[in-house]
Amino acid sequence: MPVEHRVAARGRLRARVVGVVAGRVSVPGMGQEGEGGASGRGRCVGWPALDERRGPLQASLGTLGQWLQPGMADSAQAQKLVYLVTGGCGFLGEHVVRMLLQREPRLGELRVFDRHLGPWLEELKTGPVRVTAIQGDVTEAHEVAAAVAGAHVVIHTAGLVDVFGRASPETIHEVNVQGTRNVIEACVQTGTRFLVYTSSMEVVGPNTKGHPFYRGNEDTLYEAVHRHPYPCSKALAERLVLEANGREVHGGLPLVTCALRPTGIYGEGHQIMRDFYRQGLRLGGWLFRAIPASVEHGRVYVGNVAWMHVLAARELERRAALMGGQVYFCYDGSPYKSYEDFNMEFLGPCGLQLVGARPLLPYWLLVFLAALNALLQWLLRPLVLYAPLLNPYTLAVANTTFTVSTDKAQRHFGYEPLFSWEDSRTRTILWVQAAGSSAQ
Ligand SMILES: NC(=O)C1=CN([C@@H]2O[C@H](COP(=O)(O)OP(=O)(O)OC[C@H]3O[C@@H](n4cnc5c(N)ncnc54)[C@H](O)[C@@H]3O)[C@@H](O)[C@H]2O)C=CC1
Ligand SMILES: C[C@@H](CO)CCC[C@@H](C)[C@H]1CC[C@H]2[C@@H]3[C@H](O)CC4=CC(=O)CC[C@]4(C)[C@H]3CC[C@]12C
Image 1 (cartoon, rainbow, N blue to C red):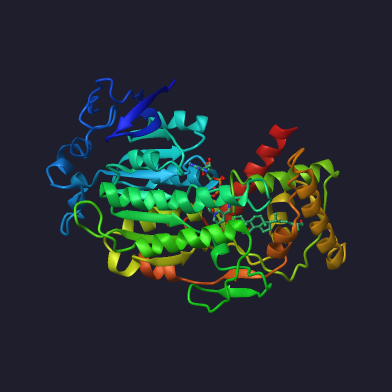
Image 2 (cartoon, rainbow, N blue to C red):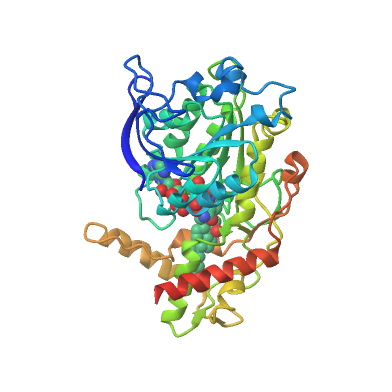
């Protein structure tokens, strides 16, 4: 079992850390080999001081900002890097964490930062890479700074994904915007140079006017107008990340940032897919078409999104001039379909049927029901949280074509999808089947 304890990092920095080290439980600050000790000099209790934490080779390189010098890129020995994944226990975050462990040869330590740590982190402690679980909140600047200190690369995927009215707009803003600001400031203060941010297609659209975005790319002109707190927060956070590119970090070198914009992510762990499956089971195996089949909704497999993060993070240093301050849509070979038809690619083989070649209800009635749901949510809020899937915003998103067609990630950092559509489909079906049977 991991040992939970409090650590103090430089000055008053504090974060709740659950140390999980390859093959054993780490108790930072308790005198284990390679760990730093407590210090009353404003250093971390439990975290090694910055220079010590870089390990013998890196420590010899000088200040943190100089940890990777041109010409060193090929030296595998000198490249044992510390990665931090915020939101590492979420749907996407878990895939990023596992992908890094499988596919990042330079990984020396992986810090997984999340408000809620998953029990599956336990199994990672048997691997060769040191995995450090950190329970913390991105809205707490000191917790973020403690986690970032000494990391070479940050993948910031933590976010409050809420388009159903579960959280207040203020909370969404606090987590997504202030949380991102805290991550950026922590990089600047501690000398971390490489930051990959998980943005969203939602920073572009669909916009409030319902304009289609048909197989667009990063340069497609589109009127991005938002009102909902979630896309507003993602757009603001993305801007902060892009504007931070080039800022001088501790040690004097420039911060390099980029933002990845997934469309609707699917795959193992996708809660909404599981909800649809369970709903279909409750309805005797039927789901009812609400959205015309002609409305295309962009989807991308979670394993490919994770792979894109790993590659972007890896290439940011070498291709800083090209990639710094850039945005990339996440894409793969998933077919262009409507939201519901796409879901049926997985739910069909699990025994569900989508009823109707056309929407069963007229659109005006759906709009009415969505508005009714919003009204009920507002009326019931003092008593109970009523947050159905259908509301005016989700209806508008599902009912507006938004698909991407681009190769920018391939051109800029050599991204090719790791999983074919067939693989992605099979993996997702197997997961839905398992998730469904465990629900019964
Ligand atoms: N699910 C989707 O279809 C898409 C998601 N995204 C973005 O991808 C990222 C990950 O999303 P998902 O994995 O789907 O969501 P998720 O909710 O499964 O994961 C988010 C993780 O962030 C953590 N988190 C939330 N608030 C936190 C806080 N204050 N401090 C620390 N950790 C916190 C959560 O505990 C969770 O583990 C988000 O930034 C989201 O905006 C972008 C496009 C599409
Ligand atoms: C009208 C209903 C009839 O069956 C279907 C409602 C489906 C909605 C809950 C989803 C349709 C589109 C989804 C969103 C989209 O994939 C883009 C997103 C990007 C993100 O960054 C976060 C999630 C989401 C907003 C996603 C949320 C669920 C839908 C609105």
